Image (cartoon, rainbow, N blue to C red; front, side, top):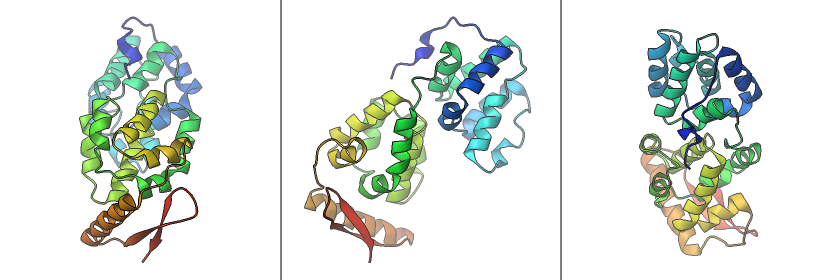
Length: 240
């Protein structure tokens, strides 16, 4: 997605920033990834106003602290904060304050769909199918996002991290995720999210997923699952 933040000229002050945050609080909170890199970059601007944030218990609490830190600051400082967002993989969040619109952020419908289908995605998505390379080439994921996924060990955790990162992106990124799934032979996963088509998982794919997941779980000491067909379009998992 090409960022809206290419619009260089915009006006913002403390009152306007606070109003935009209030009007779009829900979407903004779930769009911020409070990574150490983002926190350090913003803390360089506000000189200690984010002290202790890395020990906060949840990402939502951290995100709220980050978004509230510019309140009461002068326009130049607020613009420096917005630039820090843009420079740290949060252009979609910066765009909200630059355009006074959050329409491009992940819609409630898409966000709720990812949450509802989380378990199915963890079961059926193959994280080693080339999906990450597709997402990077389409500028949905950054190299930092890929490193975050690669850092977790099990297949389920990798898929969970992919979905978690995606849920903080934009509507356009959601659409690109669907296209990426189709491009790497994961049409059955696209069907889980779109409801379009009735393509079942092929037996060979089910067997390969089961084999790889068993190997992965044994290696890392997790529970082992087998895969069978059910009466619907998709396979299902049962504990051995």
